[in-house]
Each structure stands twice: as C-alpha cells, then as structure tokens.
Amino acid sequence: MSRARLSEDYELLRSTVEQFAHDVVAPVIAGHYEAQTFPYEVIAGMGELGLFGLPFPEEYGGQGGDYFALCLAIEELARVDSSVAITLEAGVSLGAMPLYRFGSEEQKRQWLPELTSGRMLGGFGLTEPEAGSDAGGTRTTAILEGGQWVINGSKSFITNSGTDITGFVTVTAVTGTRPDGRKEISTILVPSGTPGFTVAPKYSKVGWNASDTHELGFVDCRVPAANLVGERGRGYAQFLRILDEGRIAISALAVGLAQGCVDECVRYAGERQSFGRPIGSYQSIAFMIADMEMRTHVARTAYHDAGARMLAGEPFKHEAAIAKLYSSGIAVDNARDATQVFGGNGYMNEYAVARFWRDCKVLEIGEGTNEVQRMLIARELGL
Image (cartoon, rainbow, N blue to C red; front, side, top):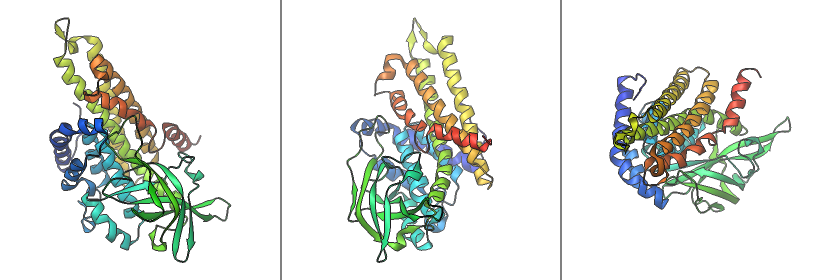
C-alpha cells in the first residue's frame, strides 16, 4: 500500500500503532461494537503506549511529540476501528488541547498529567440542539455570581463525556454581550459530578458504537470563577483554533478508514472465489480497488500537507478544510465500494467493512460539516 515518506521517528510510531491496532484492537473491537460498550481495556493500552500524550511536553506528562504524530496514530487506529480512533482524537484534540492552548498554568498542572496518561478523558461541550455549525447561536449561559459561574443550558453529541474515566467537560457559554451587541462567548471547565451537571443516557447511534457520546444538561451548575479557560469572551475564537487543528486529525481518521477498506478488499479479493477464480482477477473488482487506493493516497497527501503547514507555523486553515472535505468524502466512497466488493458479506456486521460503512458518514458531519468546509474554502478564495 502507498505510504508517504516519513522520518525514522514518525515511521517507528506509525508501525508501533499499526501493530497495537492489529494485536490489541482488532481481536476485541467487534464485540464492543455489537454490545455498544466502551473498550476500557483498549483505551488503557493506548494510554500505556503514550498515545494520549503525543503532542504535549514532558513537563505535563506528555511524550514531547507534535500534532502530526497524533494524526499518524489516529490513522493507524482507524484502519481497524473508528470508535477507538475518535476516542483518541477527541480525548486529545477536544479534551486536553483546549487546556494546553488556553488554560492557566494551574489548570495545566492539575489536569494535563491525568489526560496525557490516558487515565482520564475530557469532553468539549460545543454543539447544542440548536447550535451546531452555527456555534454563534449558543444558548447555554454562564453568569458570574459570588465568585462562581452559574451555568444553565444543554449540549449535544459530546464525545467522551460520560465514561467512568471522564474527569470534566469544557463548555462554551454566553457570559455577556459584546460592545457590538453580539454574544460574548467564554469557555468554562466543569468537573464531572458537579451538582447541576447531568449526563443523559448514551445515544443510540448508527456508527461509532464503541465510542462514548451523550447529551449534557446544566441547571444552576456552579463552578469556581477560576474554571474559566482562557480569556473571558474569547471562547468563540478559541474553539475556532481547536477546530482548525481538529480537522486535520479527522482527515487522518478518514484516511485510516479509507485505507482499512483497501486493506480488507485486497485480502478478500485474493481469497474469495467466483466462477473458479479469485474475484480480484476480474477487472471490474481490481479497478474498483485501484480507485479506492488512489483516493486514499491523495487524501493522505492532503492531510500531510495541512499538518506540515501547521507545524511550520504557517497558515493552514484553507488546507485543513480541503483535507477534511476531501478525505471524509472519499472515506464514504471507499466504504460504499468495499461493501460492494464483499457483496452480501459486506452487509454482515461480522465483517470490518460493515463497521466502516456505518462509521464513515459522520465524518462528513463532525468537526464542521462539509458544507462549512466549502464555505471556508470559498471564503479563503475571496468569494
């Protein structure tokens, strides 16, 4: 399979995670997926491997790596299963990264070591029932009273928010009105178990069935004023920065799923016999798999380019939007074609491609819908 040239350190990481996914994730994930249970033992293994600490400095318990290293790990996990991959992506990009980027030194010292070890997960409460792509439509409020934030509202589709190892969620909330009349949006950390903070039962989802997703409610939920993450009124700008980075990670996840489709189809096409020949010997099947490999290679190149620009300190919003838009689309294409290659077996949950088919569609929705990506790309073009 095609692989971009990686440095020795990156390649060692990639191959290590590839082996972990094959040896640890693959044997158990189908059972978790079918039972819709969270794979605590797998997550613990990922923590021991240092995956949750990849892009963070050693002083906070991290591995001293970078965001591109995280993306490589996410891709390799997603080649086997997206639920595990999104748990890592959300745990780092949405759970820990806001604290690392914008939190106070005290907040970093308190929370990051547990997050980077994988012993704790954090959630990022942004989406609401009526504020998804339109995050400016946030209705959750936080009023400062007597040195405490009093939070009221709800959040939807929040990953890693209700596990036994979830330590907190950071939530965006309206904390006032800006001079121009628009909402002042800030980010506030709410520890799990805080009175007034409730976690609804898990959603019944089409895919990502071994990941944790809940609706959250806040009724007169009080936390200290010091739980403000970053500057008051900068919550909207902060989440835009987090989403720009996250789009590269979601692109990596999509590439992993797309590559997993190729992997499974190449194996199956060599084993499955039809009319006395392996189905891979038929041009219609061979060309379909060749197109899947081509799409995956181009998508990988796109997210590698966006990642390189980010690490170099160059503008990358445009490239991240392109990578996320393209890779999520080809993940859907590859999953559809993989199901076709497998025929009736592709519709059976015992086969990985059935999971890939159920998992792919959300990639065109989460971390900014594909319509939003087109809007961002057009805006960068001056349109």
